Image (tube, rainbow, N blue to C red; front, side):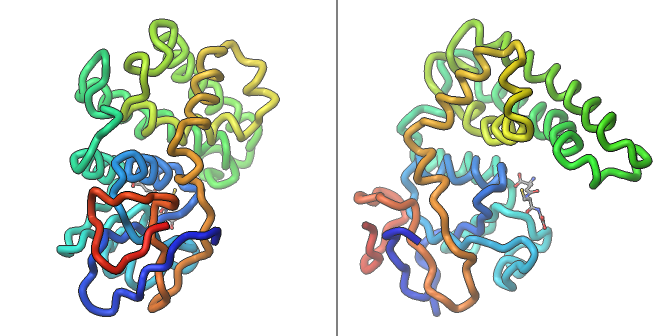
Length: 251
Ligand SMILES: N[C@@H](CCC(=O)N[C@@H](CS)C(=O)NCC(=O)O)C(=O)O
């Protein structure tokens, strides 16, 4: 668990936002990136997707991660909404105000990712989960979806010809929301990905993975268990401008 501080069990009043998360989930990754950037203090609860804790199911009937439960009891159960909530508390890197374009343009690109690219990514990565769509021809099915996903990625490559990030010379909400999905695509077949005509995308992905918040965002935790102490998060946060309470130690 590294040296993360333990939060005393929240027996009565919840004093910090509670984030239900799964380390490798791209939606949870984007939510954690925004929480790290905004320096909102939380309690993180790593969820084993095969054995979801009753507290998560009580907070959110749809039972996906990430879910953020605020101290007043409000529940935010969409990753993009968690990002926007966190950045509304504090946005020191101006992710919501890109150098070029607008918030609306970023949301459109993110929606293309979530509605289009993600569908192809899932079918490329897990063709066996979609047998009803292709009668067992896993390889051909995967390659078709890889081609459709690649067409969208080539659009990002063209966009990156102008600036090094999707909406200017510094990262924005769009880079942070889309990065986890492109990373998953790249890691599905790294040798193949490395031979494709998208040098700018490759460099963008490498810069995204070495951004400041990436390490804390990918910190590993064992699955949280009901009634056990949670983990104060993000790790390494020494000042606590948002959501801090007396008595909660942050290392
Ligand atoms: N639209 C949701 C999607 C979240 C989602 O689908 N998360 C996956 C994990 S990556 C999940 O929790 N799936 C439920 C399960 O596997 O039981 C969001 O943006 O937060």
